[in-house]
Length: 154
Image 1 (cartoon, helix red, strand yellow):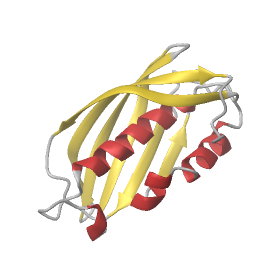
Image 2 (tube, one colour; image 1 turned 90 degrees about the horizontal axis):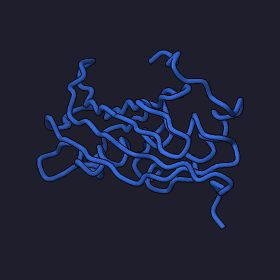
Image 3 (cartoon, helix red, strand yellow; image 1 turned 180 degrees about the horizontal axis):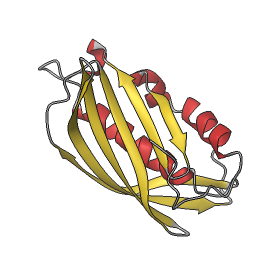
Image 4 (spheres, one colour; image 1 turned 90 degrees about the vertical axis):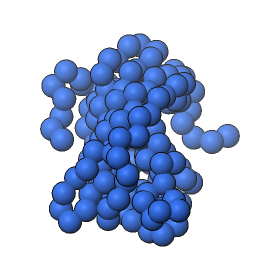
């Protein structure tokens, strides 16, 4: 995914700030998720297949799709926030389109509208199998900027 020319990061160190924040997420660590791409207004997160992240049919669990789509939306919004801010999801809706059957699950998120307080983001989730990608979910999320609030735990 190329940088979105519509958006410019206000914090020149946004990438290290986001990677540091992502590394502190216990759920992402538990899932084996990693940031695959990162740029102003967009983030891609992927998870490799493991039996521990499946549902009863052996597909990736929808909760994994939701978790990585939510984090990808949040971090795509966070790329456009000031360095002294924090990020919080306030709402999302996800449509499941197809079973998430594959070796990797990939969430590609982008900012659609960047307001001062609220960022509207979308994520598409793909199951990658044998080099092919199947679009398995779409999320629309509202992300809030919390200015002056540290991203670090108390």
